[in-house]
Image (cartoon, rainbow, N blue to C red; front, side, top):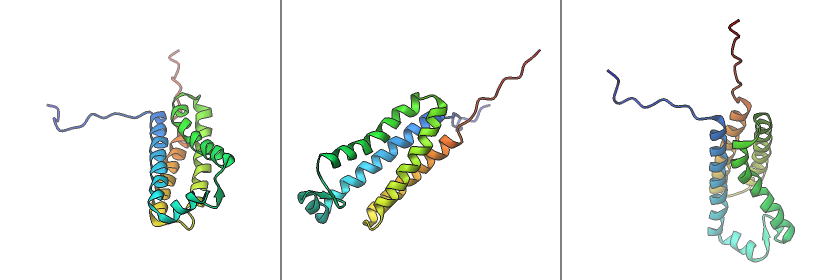
Length: 143
């Protein structure tokens, strides 16, 4: 008799894990930045036309858009790129973004540091899953 309380065992494809991690990282990323608008000092800087010491202009907004678009596209690209390319892109981009997030968190408020730590942990998981991507085991010949 089967155990009626047992859960079905299933494995999640590494591509789906990585895409989900990019998605989760982006949610934390957006919310941490959104929460900054609750700070009067941040709103004052935005009103003065600066963010993090940078002047808000077309170049800043273009760069910021590119910075957000890359991980946004990785949600999809993680599902469709060739595994060898996908692996390299995920390891490289997750490490680059982790370093940039760590640099951006220096001197920030505690909520920002917590959010950044979670983002870095999610990016580390992306690098781990991409680095340890399972390889196909060749089938032995029966000749």
